[in-house]
Amino acid sequence: MSALQTTSLTKRFGEFVAVDDLDLDVESGEVYGFLGPNGAGKSTTIDMLLGFLDPSEGSATVLGHDATRESQAVRQRTGLLPDGLELYENLTGREHVASAIETKGASDDPDELIERVGLTEEAARRRTGGYSKGMKQRLGLAIALVGDPDLLVLDEPSSGLDPEGIKRLRRIVEEEADRGATVFFSSHILEQVEKVCDRVGIMSDGELVAVDTIDNLRAELSAESVIEADVDGTPNLAAVEAVEGVTAVSERDATVELTVARPAAKMPALRTLDDTASVVDVTIDDASLETLFERYTNGDGTPASDGESEGEAATGNSETVADAGGESA
Amino acid sequence: MSIRTVARDDLKNAARSYVVLGVIGVFAALVALVFVAERNIYPDPYRTLFDVSFMTFLVFPLFVAPLAYLAVAGDRESGVIKYVLGLPNSRAGYVLGKFASRVSVTLAAVVVALAVGFVVAFATFENAPSIGRFATFAAVSALYGVSLTGLFVGVSAATSRRSRAMLGVFGAYFLLVPFWFGFLPIVNLGTVLDAVATTFGTTITDSTRSFVNSLSPATAYLFATEPVYSGVFDQYPQLAGTFGEDSARLQDQRWFNALVMLAWGGLGLLAGYVSFRRSELG
Image (cartoon, rainbow over all chains, first blue to last red; front, top):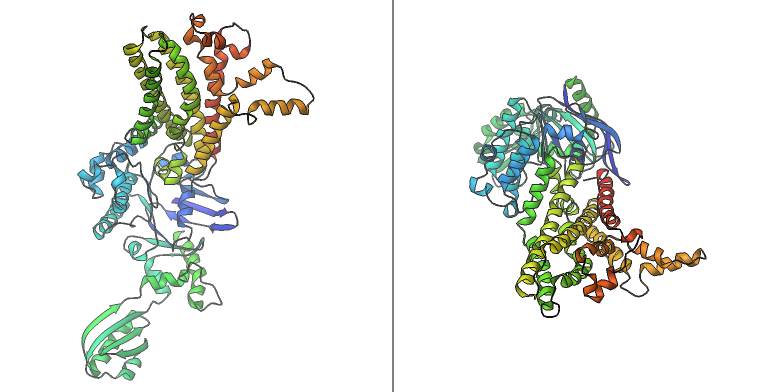
C-alpha cells in the first residue's frame, strides 16, 4: 500500500515550472530519501503534499486522503518538519510542543519528546527567539513526532544540526520506521540519507530523474574508487596500469593515485603496486555518492541528457525510473 | 479545540512583546492626559468623555493597526504559518484564532484606558464620574475596536507580506476616517458625492449626505456614543449641538450604527478569509 502517491503532479509559478509531472510512490513503512540540489523542487513538492500549495496539474494522495481537498485529515496523521522552520519567538520550546499535542489531540508527554530530540530542559523553557538553527531543528523534530504520526515529512532535517544531532536524527528515523511509520526525508546531501533510506528519489529541475536503492544506484553507475597509496621506493606504474579494472595511475611526491572502475579491482591493483614498491599507507575514496549525485543532476541542477558529456549517466536515467516502478509493484 | 490553541499561542506571543504593552500603555496615557487637561475646565467627567470620543475616533485605529496588521501577513512572511498550519488546524480556525487573539488585545486597550480615565476623573473632577456612562462608553468603544480589528485582520489575511499589510491597513484608515469624515479640504467623500451628483445631473440632499457619512465605522462610532450622554445633552452646547435633536433618520438609530461597525469588521474579516482560503503559502 502507498503511504504517499503523486500523479503527474505539476506546479508552475508563472512561466517557471518548479515541479514537472512528478509521479512519486512511497510505500507504507518505507524510509524514502527525497534528494536533489537546492531549487530542484523538493520543498515545493512537500508544500503540495501538506496543502500549502495547490498543484497546477495532477494530484497527490497522502495516507489515503487527497492532499489538497482533505489537507486537515492528512495533517492530523502527518508529522511535518518544514525547511527553515520558524516559530513564535516569544513562546518557549515546551509551549510549542504542548500546543502541537493539544492540536493533534495526542497524549504525549512534551518533556519526553523534548528529551528524545536532545533538547535540554533548560533550553525548552526558553523562548525560541533566542534559539540557534540547530535547536530550532531539534524542536521542530519533537513537534513532528507528536502523536506517533503515520507519516513523517522531514524537509532538510539535518540542516543546522551538529554531528551528535545528525546521529540522533538518524536513530529517531530508524526508531520511527521500526514503529511502522513512513518517513519521507528530503535532503541535498546524499551522505545523510544513504544510511537510513530504503530507497531514494533524485529530483533535478522539477523532475524525478532516478528512483532506486542506494546500492543499485551505485552499481548502476559502476561507481569508481580512487586509491591513494604512499610508497617507499620507485613504483612501476605501467605494471599497475596493466591490472584489469584500473583506469588511471599517476604519481606525485611518493604518492600513487589509482583509479579503479569497480571494487573488485582494488586489491589486485594494490598488490601489484606493493610488489614494485612497498606501500606504507593507503586511503580509499569510495565512489562518492556525491559523484553519482552530480551525474544525475549534472552538478548544476539541470538533468543529464543525451548528447552531453555525461551520456552514460543519462542513458541510465530512464531505465532507473522504470526499474523503480517495477520494483514497487 | 484548535481555534483556542491558535488564539492562546498568538496572544501569549503578543503579550510577551513590548510592542503590545507599549501600545496599550500609550493609549491609556493619552486618555488619562485628556482627563488631566480638562479637570479644571469642566466639572463633569462625561463632558471629557465627549472629547475622548473624538480622540478615539481619530487615533484609536492607529493603535489597533500595529496590533492587528501582522496577524496573518507576519506569520506568512516569517514562516511561522508552517508551524501552525503544519498541525491539523483549518485555515478558517487559524484566521478566527488570530482574530480572537488580536481582538482581546484591542479590548484590553479599551478597558485599561477607560479604567485609567475613570480613576483620574474620580480623583480630580469636581463631580464624580458615573460608572454607567463610563461602561456605556467602554462598550461602544469596544464595538469600534472589534470592527477595526476584524477589518485589519481581514486585510492581513488577504496579504502575504508585512509591507502590503501595512499599506492596506493604513489605506483603509485613511479612507474610512479622515477621507470619509471630511477632515481634509477637497480630498474627501463630499467631493466624490458632488462629482457623482454632477455626472447624473442631480443634487444630493443633506440627509443623503449625512446617511452616506454615517456608513464608515468611525463615524458610526461617533453617532453610537450618544447614549453615554442621555439626559445631560442640555448641559453643554457641544453635546446639544451634536446629539440634541431627536430624529427618525436611520443614521440616528443606535442599532444601525452598531450594525455598520459590525458589518465592517465581520465582512472585512470574511473577505480576508475568503482570499486567504485560496492563497498559496509557499
